[in-house]
Amino acid sequence: MEIFSTTTLLIIVCLIFLILSITRARKHQNKDRLPPGPTPLPFIGNILQLNGKEVFKSLNKVSRGVVASNGERWKQLRRFSLMTLRNFGMGKKSIEERIQEEAHFLTEEFRKTNSQPVDPTFYFSKAVSNVICSVVFGNRFEYEDKCFLQLLAFFNEIFRGFSSVWGQMYNVFPKVVGKIPGPHQKMFKAIDGILAFIAERVKIHRETLDPSSPRDFIDCFLLKMEQEKDVPHTEFHKEGILNTTFDLFGAGTETVSTTLRYGLLILLKHADVEECIHKEIDNVIGRNRAPCIEDRSRMPYLEAVIHEIQRFIDLIPMGIPHKVTRDVHFRGFIIPKDTTVYTMLSSVLRDPKQFKYPNEFNPGHFLDENGKFRRNEGYMPFSSGKRICLGEGLAKMELFLFFSTILQNFTLRSPVDPKDLDLTPLMSGFGNIPRPYELCFIPR
Image 1: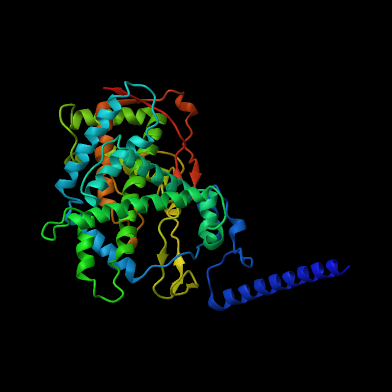
Image 2 (image 1 turned 120 degrees about the vertical axis):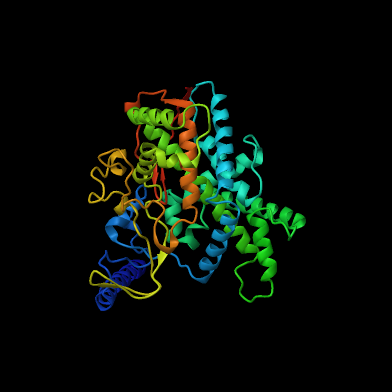
């Protein structure tokens, strides 16, 4: 009887606490005129209202989220990273030549498959990663390098992990979920593995550094660390170089390689689109020279296809978190200063006001009535504003040169009926991940 009374008392207390929390939340919402949204439950917030497989669709329904923050650290490291990447060729002829070289290595790897079905995942990861490796680490890796392959496997695990239900739970309850067993622990081990690799590269760079001739991003960061070693609260320290290099290496690998992988899957499904690209390549570039970035302005159809691939796959549907730097008046509501919000890129990329067939793949979204390329305000896969992806220029160059080089040399064939190919994502969390598939690269 005593146990029953204690249990009953606890239930009553919890119910009272729940009612008070809901009442307080509603009063607070009315007082501050926050944007409307579902009332959060104590401790767990709105986690029960999120669909684990398609979290971005759930967030579209429950309005904005409050997750992370930014500030002076982000400003300093972004400014330095952008300047350094530009110094090492981003957006210039030198980086174009690196991409062309890597595209050549990639096509040679595809030729070795002898037109047999292959999973393109790691082929693209190797090629794309080597482009950013040459900037960050000062060299590319051989495709069969075991250390390199392990590194790419780590990044693949992290990208999938953050898009899984466990990854989403970790974002909500990091202190709790981080300590319990589960599939997400593989993601943490992968992060540790990459950081250990970067730390080793930093050590080697420090031992061989020539201040008068920096070789790559790591060298430049080390020189900046030396310049600011006596500056209080500097952002250029050991942790800073590890994390910034991690971000550049990761972002420069998974996003572009996943877009290429998803793009070829779409072309397998739409053979008519691939045929039109082949005709444009033959007319503009031919078969006897490598594609160059100058060709892009003369190839409106391929440019439209690449833009439509990025729009359709909606790679990072929740975008990157933004921080409100002052109280913002929005549609009669107030978003308080320092609130972190997610701008749902999906709502723009699939906006029926901007795109006639928002849920279908249609290159016509970026072509005018004369077949010329046309821009669309709804195209923003790299986000927008001050936190727009700093590697946008590099990514666009890579996508054009890789797609054009592959399709100049090969015809794509699916070992299964194209009607059976599923273009819906395997996972839709932090990123939209395509379903596994195989294809044959038939030499043209």
